[in-house]
Length: 85
Image 1 (tube, rainbow, N blue to C red):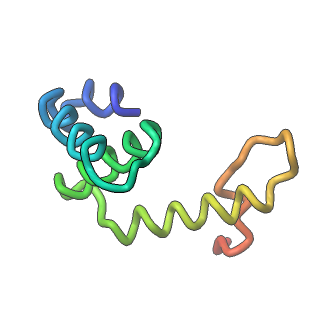
Image 2 (spheres, rainbow, N blue to C red):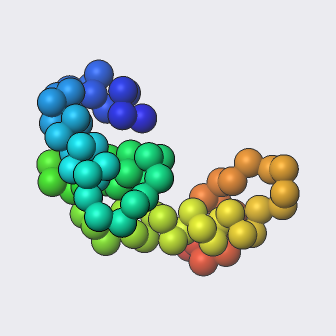
């Protein structure tokens, strides 16, 4: 996702490196994967691509969909039981 967004010109590699570095160096001892996700989220918010509330809402929807999805099946946001139809 990071590569695709960079290739579309959304941000430079320097911007990405700075965002990831901030997360990796920050407190909390997150895994590298968690730092990667947090860096992408914070970069997208700082560039006004999305808002923190939208990221949080999508994360919550994905979690509900994951819990509603049978084991071995792909997790789809459409499986979110709170989703409006």
